[in-house]
Every structure is written in structure tokens, then in C-alpha cells.
Amino acid sequence: MADKGTDTRLVIVKFTLDSSKPFPYSIDGCAGSIYFVDRSLPPRTFSGWDPVNVGTPQSSGADFILLVHDTKFDPGTNPTSVGNYAMTFIPYGDPTGVPGSPFSNQNSLPGSGAVLSGNGQDFVLDFKGAKIQKRGAKFSWDWSLLVQIVLADKTTRHDFVSDPQMDVDPLTISDDELRELEKRLWRRRTKKPAPARTVAKKKKSSRRR
Image 1: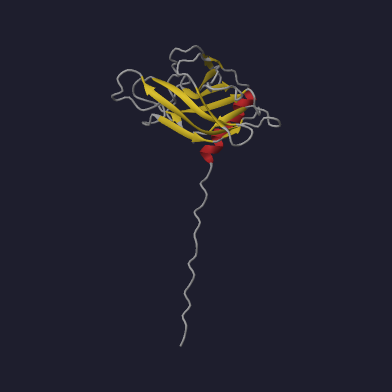
Image 2: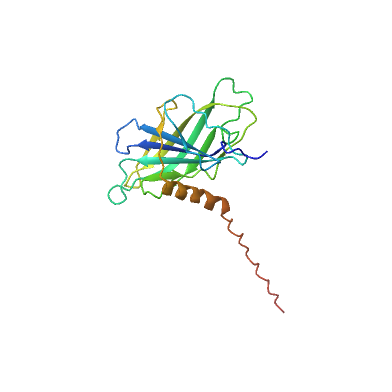
């Protein structure tokens, strides 16, 4: 069956934190936006802490981009970075027959490292091209992000965590930034694996006596 124009092709979520905050290290803000197969349709932003319906993913799965914004990041004076991280999902109600997460049958989706987005302010987390899968039924999950922020000394790490019931604000992404983020997804999908290296065996020399 062909995808509908109103099917979801991309979901972007952005978390905001302050790496200079003392313990407990909590994520302060969350914003989200949903993009459709029909690119002429405006994105749907979501807000509040009630469950969010991300719609019906396109048949190949909806792309997912997770951004982390450190309000104290500065490339010159405070070059913080991202270490390891994981998204964790807990199903609503009876977990029997419910997939572990929107992405797979696993409850946790780990990752490591991040790159700066085109605006030079947001870290783009790498979940290896994980997609929100199209399912035969509707399911719901609570979810949370745990992310290590590496401070400018390159040694100290603080673990920041999001509240599954935190307020979500509408997310506005510029057209240029959206194109840049989607290019990253395209490059990951089309990246060819490195060719396997072969080592030629040395031929044994025979000695004549």
C-alpha cells in the first residue's frame, strides 16, 4: 500500500540542558516536531506532557533525530561534548505483546558521541539510523533520555536525565537546518561499508640441503 501524504516521515526532538548546573543533573526543556510525507504540509509541533501521537510512520519507517542543546556550550571558551547515552522505553499498561520501543523489540536504544548540527549549537545524537517502525496496532510508551555530558576538561562527566512527564514545547527548525539534518540521514543510509582488508600469506621458502 502506498504511503499517504499525512503519514509521518520524520520526528525531531530537542532536549535543552545547562552543563554548569550542580547535582542533580536534570534536562530542563524538551521540544518536538513531526514532518509528513507530503512536504507541502506544515510540520506539526507538540507540547505539554500528555502522550503524543506521532501519527502513522511511512512504510519504510519514520526517521528520528534527537538533538541536545547545552546552553553553556561555547566552541572557544567552553567546548563541552557528548559521551555515551541511551533512550529507555516503558510500555503503557500490560506489556504482553507490546514491542520494547517504537524502534525495535529492545527497551533501550544506546549510542555514543555526537556531532554539531549546522547551527553550531545543537549536538546531533547518533542512533545508527534507527527508525520508528510501522506497526499493525497502536502502542504507547513512556520514555526518557540519559546522556553523559563531557565538560571542557575532557575528563569530568555529568549524567543528565529527562523526566518522562516533562513539559514539551513546540520545536521550530529553519528550512536550512532541516535540509542539513536530512542530508546527514541520507549520507548515513548511502554510506558504503569499508572494504574488508585481506592479508596475503607469505610463501614459505624451501631450503635445499
